[in-house]
Length: 523
Ligand SMILES: Cc1cc2nc3c(=O)[nH]c(=O)nc-3n(C[C@H](O)[C@H](O)[C@H](O)COP(=O)(O)OP(=O)(O)OC[C@H]3O[C@@H](n4cnc5c(N)ncnc54)[C@H](O)[C@@H]3O)c2cc1C
Image (spheres, rainbow, N blue to C red):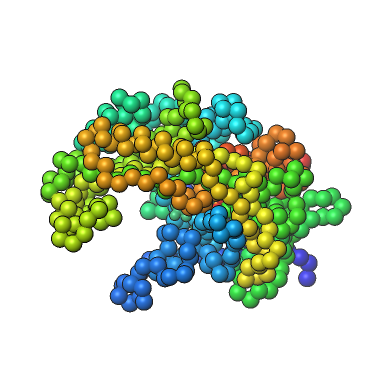
């Protein structure tokens, strides 16, 4: 029997895979999508067992999914099982890798914060001389951001700040709570902007690839998809040097299979795409494949109490609502001990407070908890992490996954820039809260391990120079013109922003370019 073949093979079904599938099939190009995990039956799986029927009462099973802070007994099957697909690191330099292999990938569970990068990120080197500029600017990506924002129904307020570019928003005209108004006023005095947050509303309660992207692709009749198949490596035509398909394995039966393709698009999630390329020994004439691993700095936080909301006086008008402080450092000023900048997620709360915020116990603690309930005001940091060649992933020759595929070893850690940034952020945030008249109950300067933010990007970066980058500005391999990588691995710098809007805008742009190249007969 001849080997099955397709025009475009897409590996991965998340935000990036879904986006390229939609764009290509709508342009009449046939695609086959392979995905490592199963299709989710949301209707069936939505019913949760009562906590009393679960051995750990819904909490996390000890020793299971130790790197996935979101995991509980209710959702444990959502995440990639670390025993089935392990990864390694130096125990002194831990890394949290949070993966989802269900059909739709992490788009099923993301928190939907939706931001554009600005030219402070795309052209970061021009501002401080560190690293590399991206080969594109905001102007190149803006039309694609606008389309993605439309599809994902991003709600936000235009603020006119160059470091927080406005978009094609469902306009958020909600009023600020009383506490937030005081916080905004305190920020003004310190030169710190406080803006409306921006997030994808999606449709019908979901903002995922499986409801906003893939249905359009399937409707064209041009997309076929196979779930529960794990791609092992890409194959190459020895004469042309082009990729010509992939070897993959059935997740359950472990049967080995292959498929031929005219073009291959990797959309397996940043580190899985890089792992596939490293295992295939491809696209690395630059020597930078796997290098410049970036994520976001998470962990530092501040918990406050708004005195006027204590003792039963909390109201939604005083306390409810959230805000975002976009980057304000190193825009018009130059900080002494760190480059780039950070943002704060800020929110008020009308619920009970975490006892860990109080140095107390027993009846006295209970009294405080009763009094402070409904008065919480919290801030949590998102800081830019710098890209270094020395922060990288490689293949661990000694460990394989459940299908015998060599796993990744992650080599990374935070540097003084991130630690200094965290210190400035927490001190400045606490000063703002105090200036607003809030009581600061606790503050933490401590970053969580790299990867915790679930914003891993880089390792397959784009650039104009094939000697220092893996992909060109169209997410296309410099070495192999019919190979594209469209997930976050193409990022040159991370910014403070959550990455997914940029991942999708890049995927949309890359797919449009690929369609043009196919039409012109260049690929
Ligand atoms: C809890 C949570 C909250 C988040 N919140 C935000 C947020 O607020 N804002 C934001 O911007 N981002 C957020 N993110 C990150 C965001 O989800 C990701 O950036 C984005 O979904 C990545 O999309 P992707 O298509 O590149 O990769 P993924 O969604 O990881 O998709 C990769 C797909 O590839 C498949 N795959 C992997 N390896 C193979 C293989 N070998 N063979 C076949 N298939 C393979 C997987 O099955 C998976 O379906 C969050 C993530 C999580 C988990």
